[in-house]
Image (cartoon, rainbow, N blue to C red; front, side):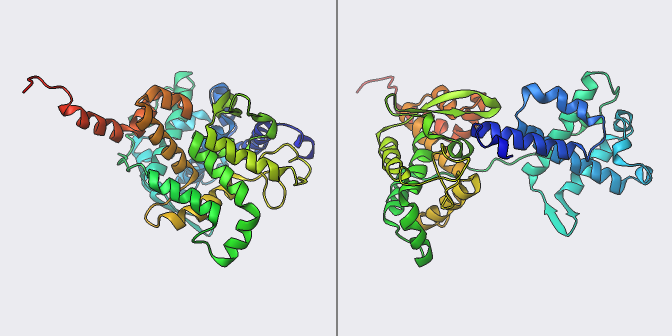
Length: 352
């Protein structure tokens, strides 16, 4: 990886994901490579890794639970074996996914996790069925479990203000946390202000380079899912927080490979997604004990505020980078319903 340190962050991640994907595919039947080659142009490396993990679970399940595979290595399976399974076999697999052992660990999947794994399996079967490699598609006859919509968790406007004040002042932190806070306050405030003020994904945030910032046009360049390059624009509060941090950033000598990274860890390396998740948890726990707030919840907070201010669901979808506006509409349906309810008495048929 040393040769890749000079590459842009998103390219480094793609290289790491490609290496990991090759390792995972090596554990699967040989014909599975055709599937991953076929979806390469329409999926991100992260999505393909998720498929590989899901398929690994499926084939390991078959190996452990199908007597006819007792003496057959997974690597030797052919597409023809997919046709020997019935819908009932795949439904048993769905039941297995609720709770199973892997090594010394217990694995538990809620409805959404099961849905994802079965969706991966359906996509896998569909690929070979559409290409007439198999003539029978039992996965098409399996219904996904019903997913009960959970309310979207987000911060209210007053909670956002308290959160940012808390980051500035270090309120509600333990003594140990305050020691670190003195060293990271300006950086943490810039990160949280950016997450709340632009709706940027945490992976996009940590991938920012200093050269991606354009204060003349109040924007920064990011690489969205699939490698698409777009410009996000920021307001005055985000600009002020960034400029404060950049003054501090000038005094830091980063480690090799992180020279151009915008946000640095205390180890002077590009900050990781996990580190941002931990700092969000640290500060938001002091603001609300009833809500579990993640970087994605801060993204939802931004989307909610933008929609409340503009009422433009297409604008929200574009800024958040949703490829399908229905995804956005589903997330903010409660707000739309509230607006419709408020509109019920706006039109008067008779004047007094």
